[in-house]
Length: 212
Length: 309
Image (tube, rainbow over all chains, first blue to last red; front, side, top):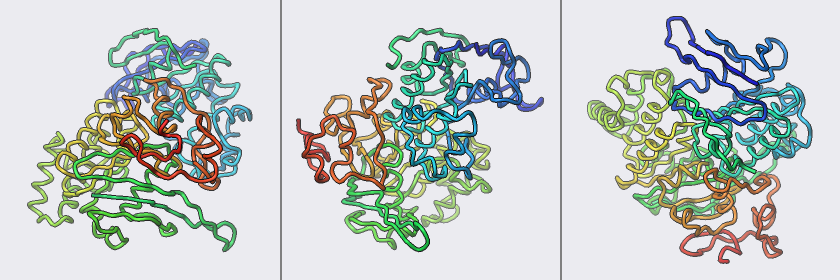
């Protein structure tokens, strides 16, 4: 289980708290939605859970172990803008090999053409590059996936295609997913449970009809 | 006001050494915008939405060749005329705060646009003050640098630049992704207001949901061509003509969330016939030999030979 207990965070001692006393947990294989208006620290919380930032107070753990400092992190974060998440001077195949290389049939499921592998990031469109960024995280070492507005810049059809492939994979491998998004219909469609930071409480809304 | 027909954009790229290849990215693109209406241009990334905007503004790179006709107020848009009109009669509301000069206070930037449009300095200053007031920007905002304003405020500053320019045609390029629903609605309402003042507005977006909130008509682009032009009501009433538009509508999370598999063909390997034929549930032999022409079906335009069924 991925847990964040009593998380507090601020960027410097004199600055206001961005995250205050947040506690949340994601079970393996569970899809949890995280919603809040802009400025409520959604992205900061995602970064804390994925180990990009260290909490000022509180702790993040996976199966009661703290996140590893050096090796591959079992919690992977996918950002909204893939072009900022890849090395612009690497070819796509090198980018994919940066973590644990994904398997060929997963690339197919995400709609990644083999022709893209020899290109550079600027030679792919945003939607194509986002598939690469996602494929990079779908490997046996990943236990939890945090999707921070992962499909906000994609058209509806591509969004549905990508989520279908991602959820097929995470269900088959019991990966927990945290969906950070503004898009209420999308979150409702995808998630077993929805957390609303603004309401400051766990709605635990059980939503049926998750996409097949 | 603006009428684009059979627009094509071809890039010439160097392959190896001096050998060049021609890559046609937009083929047979059609669009019409009247004064006082919002036309949304919807499509996947790579469908030619932004290139259309760049073609209208005349800011395509040098290795691009434009074919077809673009008429603005009945006169053809030549490169010289584009340059004259750009920022004056035709204005762009760019995507993000990244398009503002990071080293200049935002008030000054908007004022500069007003002055370039022929207002005197004091008149420009009043115009800025009025526009900022209209968009609920606090008076001290004009002294801020772009990095000091929030995303929503930056969006309003960008809309302000289009408003002080008195442009007849406003092109908004992807103004909404990743914004909170309230800010999205606010941004779209600003565009609606611009149309109510008698301007033409082109809203470029990949988000059909956002487009339908505000647009009068929706043009759906696919692989660099216009697949369908429908009125906004056609979506909810199920009067869609093109199978791709129907697929887009069905794939929304609030509808069925069922996508059509596959991807848009790349410009290097476009099929000879209908561009959607490899993913289409309606495909027949007749779709393959040639591209269907844009034709009127049920008071909309569609590029599909099976659309009237």
